[in-house]
Every structure is written in structure tokens, then in C-alpha cells.
Image: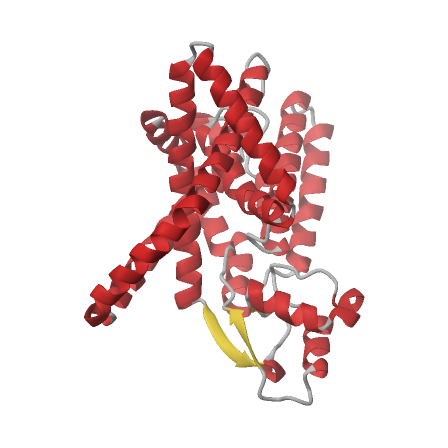
Length: 359
């Protein structure tokens, strides 16, 4: 199933629902067979719970537009089908398939970061004659960026503090291992920071509440003699802000330089992914057709959406739009499953050691 989905994702840019449905039917009969033949019931329910959380995690990644609906469903299929003992060397209660996510995103992130660095070096070499001019421009921009940087840091401090408080409140529960896991915290911050920053821009009072809570809590820690805890939270926020921001910037830079192409509106087809800003502009122009357009899936435009956009701009055939090239996640999902099965572990222990050393 992994090979079939990897092939269709590379060749056609999508994972077909018929293969997902086939997998789900197989999962249903497999679990029914195991239950009816005296398999350990608690083990079966633990597997079902793990698969259900994987489905929820996949949904969240789809909701935050980090991958398509097909990728999310395929991830849940892997979670249901890989026996739990294949996570034995880095087992996480309730959600051992977090190891699968780690084995997807670490190789992928490394590839993207290396590609982004190579692209950046090429760009720097191309602009080498304008280095002095660019330096003075960047110094001016940096001075204007400092207030935004401070606001970003306060937001990270707030998020890390809330997560740490929640983790300490649940430290006696069986879920404490996952809630205090540095990689889990990193993923949560990666997913939520963009959304939180967007809400702050839309509603200024959210910023005031966040900064008020941060300054109040920081003052409480300092004046109550818990200065080491205050320093720990500061360093945690700084490290997570640096890592998350670097990951986001590397990803955005790579996409901007390598994964975006400009095409005529009349050449738009089903499955194409509009660049976020481009989608916002087009959808604003098509406000009267908002209900017809519906939700913009990260897996690409639906057939009716592509046709509607082309029809609305039929009188102006020279209008162009930026689209993202489709990125095949299915081969990385297959690679992740193979790494998990062969090693019975993931990159998670290594990542946790790095974070624990830094923190």
C-alpha cells in the first residue's frame, strides 16, 4: 500500500481515496479477526486508540495546511497497521505513532534546510556585487524589526510557560511523558505560533492579554525568589523561538525559491496549490462566489474551484497567479514506516537529548 501511494503521489501528485478505502476495509477485517481469535483485548484497544490519535494529529496537520487530506489519512492507516512492538525502543504512551511523525519530518526538514542553504549560498554569490548595499539596508531593517522580535519572544515565553504549567499539572498522569516531551512541545509550537500571531494581528487586545500575563508571571517568579525557574523559561522560550523560526524560514525560503512558479489563470487545473497570498487575493476578488469556492484544501484546488476561477477571469487571459509545485509526502511516509519497522525506534530519543542538553 505504501509503495502504491508513493507511486501515485509522485506521478499524479495525489493519493487516491480508493487505496485509502481499501486499507480501511482491510484494517476493519484485520482487527475483527484478531478480536474473534482471542487476541489481547487491551492491546487491541491500545492500537485502536493510537490510530485514533494519529487520525486526529493528521487532521490537525491538514487543518493547519501542512499537508493534504490524503497524507493525513495515509498516516492514520500506517498507525493502525504497524504493530505497537515496533515502537518498543522509544515507546510513548497512548501515541507511539508520534515516532512515525518524527521519522517523517526529521529527514524531510534536513533535506529542506540543506536545499535552502544551497539556494541561499547561490543567491548570495549572485548578489555578491551588492553586498555593501544590502548590508546597510539590512541594518536599517533590523532596527525596525527589533520591536517585532521582542513581541515574538514574549509570545513564545507565554506559550512555553502555559505548556510547562500544563505539563506540571499532569505530571502524575499517565500522559505526562508525552506532554513533557520536548519534541511534542516543538510540534505544538510549530503548529500554533502562526495561528496565534495571526490572531494577535487581527485583535490587538489578545496581544495586551498575552503581554500582561507574561510580565505579571515573570515579576511573580523574580520577586518570589524563583529566579532559576524564570531563567529556565527564558532560555526555553529563546531556544524554541530560534528553532521554530529557523524551521519556518528555511521552509518558506525553499518554497519561495524552488517550489513556486507563475502561470496564466487560464492554465490553472485541478490539484494545483495556490500560494497563500495569491489565494487570498483571488478569493477576495471572488467574494460573491465565496460559497461556491468553499474551503481551500492544502492538497490543491478542486475541479469546480479551478473552473470557477478560470471563468471569472476569462475576459483577461493575461492575468497570472503563483502556484506551488506539489510536494510528494507519501514516499516520506513510506520511508518513515520502513525506518520504524527496521529500527523499532525513531530519531525521537536523539532529538530529546539535544533539547534536554540545550534546555
